Length: 509
Image (cartoon, rainbow, N blue to C red):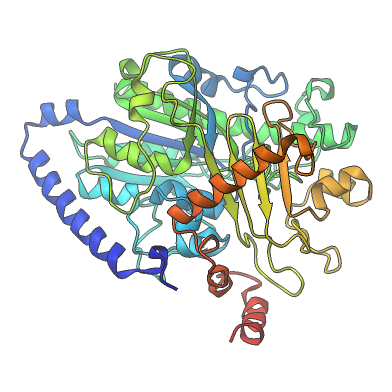
C-alpha cells in the first residue's frame, strides 16, 4: 500500500525535526526573565469525562443532572455547540485528541484496544519539549498498549494517581482526581507553565443500580431519547448515570477552586468535554448524533469573552494544534487538525468562521474480532443540516452478532430491557442497517427517519457522498483509497486477541 498514512519513515523524520525545533524554542524561552516567560505562556487544563452525553448538564436545562462547575465554565467562557469526535469510542477518540489527526489517520488506534504508534507527535510531548510541566490523572489514552511501541508513560502525560478516597457509590472510582491534580501542581517548578490532562473514569459503567433514586432523584425529571421506550427501568438507569456525571462535575469544581487558590485560574485555558456519548445502546460506538456530537466548553479569563455560544464545527483533532498555538509552540507537521484559537478568542457568537461547516466520522472494528463478529466499518459526513452514513458491510451486525451472544454495548438495565423486546426499539439499537443512511439532523437529531431512499433527497445524498469520498481520499483514508485490507491487519492487545489471531491466520494470505 502506498498511502501516506502507512509510510512511517517520513512522519518519524518530521517528528524528529519538529522536536529538535521545539527543544531549541524551549531553550530560548528558558533564557527569558521568569516573570515575562510566565506572563506569555498560559497553563492548559484539559478536563475529559468518560462517556458523558451531549448537553447532559444543568446549564442546558437538564433538570435531572446538577453540574454547577461545568455551568460556571460555560457562563464564564464559551460553549461550542458543534464539537465532534471522528470516532465515538474511548481509545480512538482519545488518540485523535492527542495526535491531532482524524481516526483513519492514526494507524492502529483507529480500533479500540490497540497499540499506540510512535511516529506521530502528541501535544503533551510537544509542550513538554517546549518547557511545559506535563501530567495526567485518571484515564489518559486507552484502553490499549503504549509501552511496546516505546512510550515511557501514557501519551497523555506522566501519571499522578496516588491519592484515593472512598467513593459514595459502587462503580465510582476511588481515585481522587482533584487531589492528584493538587499533587501535580505542588511538584511544578516555579515560573513554569503546566499542561494537565484530568480524565475521570466516570460516567463510564458500571453503576450501582438504583443509586439515583436512593439519592433522591426524580424519575419524572428525566428526558428519555425517542429511540428507547419510556419506562421506569430506563429512567432509573439514566438517574444512576446522572449521579456519576455529578461526581465528575464535583472534581471539576475542586480543580477550579485549586486554581483560584494559587492565583492561576485566569491564566489557565480550561477545556471541558467528553470522549464520546453516554454508555447506552445506540449511542456509544455508533455513528449517530448522540454518539459523536460532544459537549465542550472553554474558559480562559479575560482572553475569552464570557457567555458566548459558538456554532462553528470543532473537530477533536483541532484540539492539539489549538493547544500548541496557545502555548506559542510550532504545530507538529503530523497534526492535520486546524487550530480554533481565533474562534475561541473572537468576541462573536453563532458562526465565527463559516468554513467550519463539515465533519467526517468513521469507525472500523472498535472491539475485538471473533467468528461472525468482524466489526462494522462505517464512514459518515455531517453538515449543518444532514448526516450521511455509508455502512460498508450491511450484512454484518453493527452492535454484535446475536448468534454469538456478543453485543458491543456496555451491560445495563437499558440493554437488558431492549434485548428482551424484539421490537422496533430492539432493531434501532441492535438490528442490521442498510448500506446508506441519511438524516435531516437539524430536524431529526435522534436520527430516526432514514431518508436515503427518499427521491426528494436523492441529490442531497449524492452530493454528500461525493464530498465525503473526496475528503477521505485527500486525508489518505486507506478504505477510501481501496486498501480496506489494511484495517484487517491491525492486532489487538487484550482479552479476545487470540481468537482474532486465529481468524487472521486462516483468512489473510
